[in-house]
Amino acid sequence: MASPESRSTRTILHVDMDAFFAAVEQRDHPELRGRPVIIGADPRGGRGRGVVSTASYEARRFGVGSAMPISQAWRACPDGVYLPPNMERYAAESRRVMEILRRFTDRVEPVSIDEAFLDMTASQRALGSGEVVARRLKDAIHGETGLTASVGVAPSKLVAKVASDMRKPDGLVVVPAGEEAAFLAPLPVRRLWGVGPRMEETLAKLGVVTIGDLAALDPARLERRLGTHGHDLQALARGIDDREVHADSEEAKSIGQEHTFASDTKDPERLRSLLLDLSDTVAARLRAHGLKARTLTLKYRDDRFRTTTHARTLPAGLDSGDEIFEVIRVLFEEVHRGRRVRLLGVSSSHFGADTPQLELFAGDEDPSPVDRLRDQVAERFGKGSLTRASLLGRRERRNPSDRPED
Image (cartoon, rainbow, N blue to C red; front, side, top):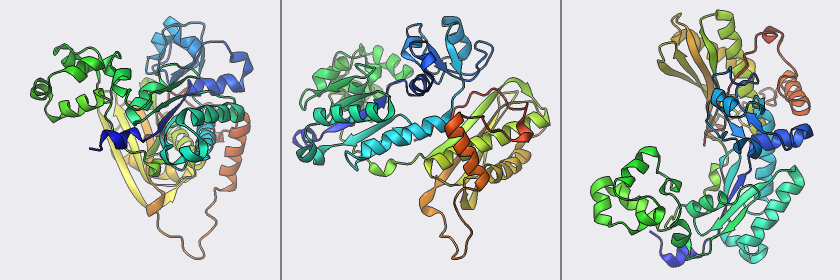
C-alpha cells in the first residue's frame, strides 16, 4: 500500500463522454437536437425485446436509462426517437477522442468505448495542473468532434471516476489531494466499485447507507461480515485507491455483437442470415479498431433459455466478414440441435501481439476491396447503406450488446 504522500502526488483524470451514442446521433442529425433520443434495439419502439443502450439527457428526464427494456422505455417516453445502434460510427468517434487524449499523455487507459483514465502526474510541469489539462482536453474534444465530455480530476482512479459523474453533462469536478474521504462521505455507498444491489443490501443491515458510514464502521465488525473484502471496501470508502493507469489496456479484450429474436425461431434461413449479419458487423468493428482476431466465439441460447458458448482459435487473425462467418457457421452446426433459437451472438478476441509473423511473400494483409468499400460507404452514409444481396429483406431488427468489452 502506497503512503498517503505518494498517493497525494498523483493526478488522475477520468474522461467520460456524455450520452455518447445519442450525442453522436444528435450531432449528425440536427433535427434530433433537443429531442429525447433512445439508442436501442428496435425502431418500432415498445414492440421489441431489446434494452436501451444509451438515452439522451432529454430522454432521461422521462426516466429512461441504460439497460432498461425498450418496451418500458417506450411506455415512459412514447414520443422519443428510437434508433438502432450504429457501432461502426461510434467506434470511429471513439478513436478520434482517444487520439485527442493521447496528445496530452501516453498514459491513457481506455475502459470502454466512451471513457478513459489519464495519468497526468508526470506531465503537470509541462502542461499545467490537472484542472488546466482537463479544461484544455474538454475544449479539444468539443472543438474537434462537436461532442462534450465530463471530467473528474483526483489523486486516484476511484475518486476521479466518481467525480466525472457528478456534474454531467459537460462537467468538471476537481477533488484535491487529502479531500478524497470528505468528497466521498455523503454519497450513496453504491457509488463504490464492488457494491452492487446485493452488497448494498448487506451493508444496509450493518447500518451503512453512505460511503461515510462505511468509512466510519468498526473494521472488525465489517470483516466478520465480509471477510478481507470488507477491508478493501473500507479503504476505498476512505479514498484510498492505489491502482495504476495502465496504458497497455488500449485495445478491447473482445469485440462482439448479439441479437435476441422478437420471437424464437428455427427457420434455417433466418438463422443463417443473422449469423452472416453479425459476422459482418463484428468484422467491420475489428477493422475500425485496426484489429484482427484469432479467437471467435458463438453464443447460443435456445427456447428453454439454455445458453452455451462455443469457441475456436485460429492460427492467424481475421477481420473479414466472409471468413468470420465460415468459422461461426461451423460452430453453429456443432451446437445447434434443431430447437427454436432465442439468441445468437458472435464475439472475437485474442488480438494482435501473438498473431504469427507473416510469411515473406504473403498476400496483402489490408482489408479486401469489398471490405474497404463497405467501410467507406458505412462511414459516409451510415450502417446498412450497402447490404449483401443475400441479406436483402432478411436483416433482423437487432438489439446488439456490442460495446467493446474491456
